Length: 189
Image (cartoon, rainbow, N blue to C red; front, side, top):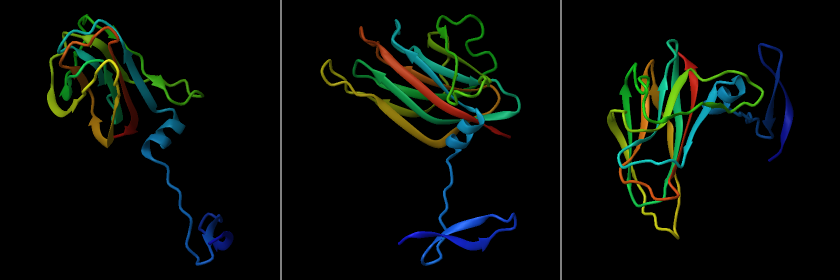
């Protein structure tokens, strides 16, 4: 089956590609792709630090009063066998009162954009109160068999104003530590 340029003209005067059976070729970008093109997609990454048992490895809070933050994926890796808890909360002061962790800056996934994320993020924070558990991941790590977990959310996690997504590591990581990345994008309310 080959595609040829059709004589089908839309209201704007554009033509559409169709195959020999006059089936139209349609390509639709994902929400993440659209947001990346607009400079509205970000990644927050936390890597090895002195993470204690039950500490929040990474938490992201949407600080926008007019846009929703859609969470697309969560990648996590820990060098010990452990449970990883993913939780949600709404908290206007999460890690803002001098949490013990480190601030994490959202990186714009469009290198030609100078937009910054309307979000706060912290890693290795013991002062974060765990929210409502929505998912639990499990690792079965050994020193010779270490694999990360790439949790695709299918854009099903949406943070409103002051909505928080946290990733907690239940057992204390070893010397190599952990890695956690949260990828999300903004949409208008």
